[in-house]
Length: 102
Image (cartoon, rainbow, N blue to C red; front, side, top):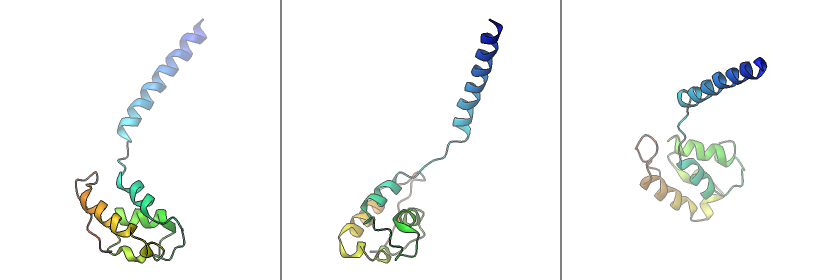
């Protein structure tokens, strides 16, 4: 019987510890990253100078990229214009929009 009580107490303490850690160590993610990645062609060619479309999308959302036409496969379609419009109208977690050129 004591084994169940001790294990229950340990589980309770660890559960509370996990709940506190979840609140303290929470990382705010930028909701725009997924949409930008969806609008990129998904070729993962690296022609933009970044390691695939995910790296390029991350650089766009972080404001490191000023010109979207670095994406050579994407420059043939109209998605780069959609990305520009999306970034200029959608605020990130910091409340700011991103200005980029096509």
